[in-house]
Image (cartoon, rainbow, N blue to C red; front, side, top):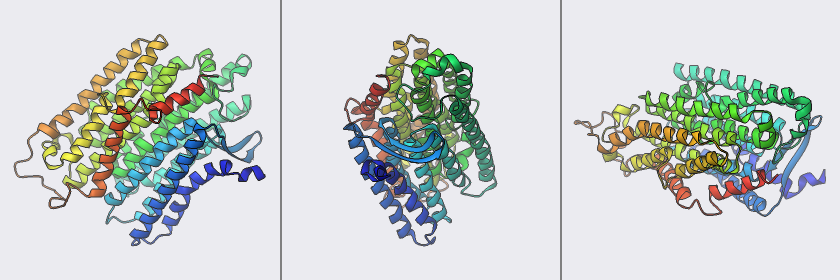
Length: 504
């Protein structure tokens, strides 16, 4: 038991507690104690960022971070900090900072802020726990905790539309969790539940249990596909857009959809492995599922006039790029998939921040209301433009890097049709994003001004706590694209991850 108390074994636990403890304290914070609530939030974020930096440095030097306690026979609860988990944790921690600042400004004067920020912190804790999960049983536990902690955020406003969206969200995600649990249980009966292993651990059982392994894979991908919003399991996501803008940003860029995509990466690479997945004929159907999702969701995005719903269908399409890269089963495509986990998060959170700014400042929710926005809100419109161009794949924004690697990865494994698919997706992205940019920059503002202008005489174009997070994440979207060649960039770290996965 003494090994439990080394700093390398305790660090994963402390990273989870750095948001869990502030969240629990926030629940007990009186509604009027804004300063105390903000201090708890920001202290937790600062501690988490420091701890994540320590783990990043340790993993890069070859240190092992592992915490284990007994749970099920041959399936303990394990927290393990490896290179892949840190990619997700670093994204979650940085965006927790930006989203918390944004939420403080967005909810200023609103009721039930302690409840909101309490669940917000619990959601981050579940996300980080899921990323640090060292085996499937631990992953499943945090996967379900993530569902329970995000539901109160979706229904936060308490309107009939919010309650309806919450019921749909709960039905989908609990159903997905049930499928995942069934798959994990079946796989456990076949091969037990060892730690996640680079290259997977089921290869030796293929001859004896191929059908069982295929069924377990299908069940787990279906369960994970709900949160990853793979078609036809995606319908909950556009409906959840009735939630406040910080929640939308959290769902799309930090927590829920990324948890599903991250789980698919774990199952394909660290449970089954590329070789076993190919032998069981599992990767090609997954590739086609990602392709259908990518195109279908883009076409649906074109049809949406509500800005947040258009962004929601964009998320469905863009997150499928991660599944696409995983299913291509080659090292270059794997780099594209893993780095897109970060790049899509940065760009999409920027877009939702900006959409929230448009709504809170000028009451703008529809595409046709965006005319002339660049004149009234130039900084927000500039940040929105960076996010949109990145989603299309215009250099030097981060999205360009992801798509280049996915295209090269498709050619590497002899799937040239995927390059045409990516090109078609980029054209559809342009078709539903460029009209928004044209309206914002070149459209004619209303002759009598905007009917609602909550920050007309403000020092900035909107509340600074709404503006600065959008500019921060837009800048990061540019910097990680411009400096993609650096070993410290998300791309450099993704190449480090893949070098380990495919070395097995």
